[in-house]
Amino acid sequence: MSRSAALSAYKNLLKATKVSFKNDAEVLFAARSKIRSDFLQERELDSKIAQEKIDHANAVAKFLVANVVQGIQKEEGKYLLDIHEQTELGDNETIKQKKSEMGSLAGAKATKRCS
Image 1 (cartoon, rainbow, N blue to C red):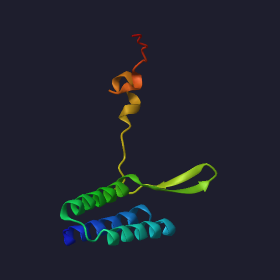
Image 2: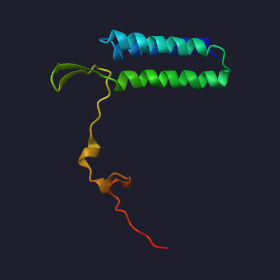
Image 3: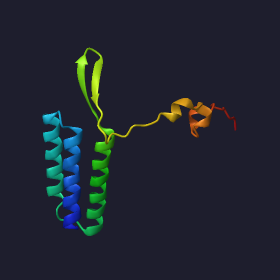
Image 4: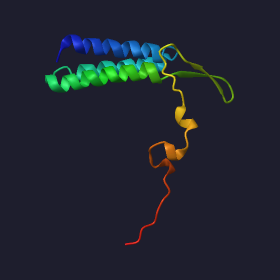
């Protein structure tokens, strides 16, 4: 395993948890503990498996930063979301499309066939 690549992935995950869980100490601590234990458990892997694990760790870090936001309950049924500059915001274009235009089975009608 490339030690520098593994260390970089580890740091990326720690930074991602800091961004994603900054206002929730319990979840932040649990996530970091899990990351630490997983990295320590998999110290001695062959290079191919190690590279797959490193790639996975980097993908998880990217996902956490871009797709996880914290919500703080302000009152019953209302939450304030902590959306930061790295949060991925979708354009919801599929909402404007008809089901038949989505390119999936969403708009397909079931047909009954007899053999």
